[in-house]
Length: 427
Image (tube, rainbow, N blue to C red):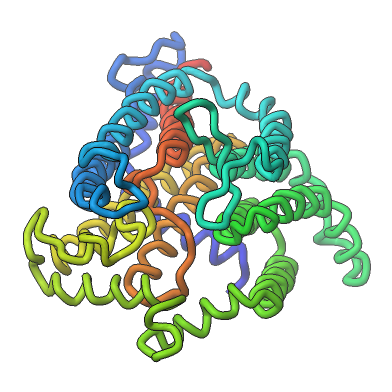
């Protein structure tokens, strides 16, 4: 199956959930340019699913972090410290996302390159010892008073905007290659995509200096996803995917810490890794096992009592599995599946109306949140090697929640503009 056929089949499948386009109603309003107020609303399914994930996450952050002050590392904090900070970040993120929702997609497109430059500057500043904050051997945060900001989260959003804008600008050049000879196709393709590859490589290089390979992996997948959805030729796409896979495999092999994580993943119960690199994974699996089908009940987790490290961040799903069982884990999966499907549908609608940048942004955000959630779930379930990626919208983390909600606000803006144009209005 060609890449174009695969894209069309995926788009049709994700689009089945959508509502009718309302061509008849559109013709009624096209003459006047007026749009009924109900059309100017937003995708309520997307909003409600996001709200459920955030509120459930808030409850689980409280449950997973309530025993942390018993550890010497967190002894100066109260039992409510993390949940209160998370609640404040959620409130702040909701306010900022309302502002982001007011910004037209045309403004976001103009801001794509400046925003990427800002994220590069922040990623570089993190590496300066007097600015970047060192936590568990990783330098990933910038401290501003009581607030810690993680620039890699902003970089993910910036790459979504930049890659979408870049594909719109280079799409004509990529489409013209159908009549070009085979030997010239690769050369023209490289000429078309190398600036974006360089930008992603620079971002990745800075992230590797912070020892944040997980964020680099997410950003690489975002860029690849937008290339695929933007219409890149199949064999060229798989060529880039092959090169990237080799690059990531090399990064793992030449680094002792990353290689040890892979070996621990393959045999976490071994005497060599059970108390070192495999410790988090083994206790995550124990938590999942204790939960069985229906869980031990909210607040009843034992693994969160100083056994499972980072239970309120990277391994929040393990606590959900222990307290809500298989039913709870499946519910989380369904909610994320629904969220991603709605965003893919919104993006497909925008592209169908020849709003390519808006459509690629919506689908790029879907790839980002969907892939990061998939990796986090895979790690918690023992299906993937341990990687420091949080569960979007649910895990504790201020900057992650803030950027996630801004991204969702932009997707909702894409949907609003789709509705206005669909019913004959003007932007």
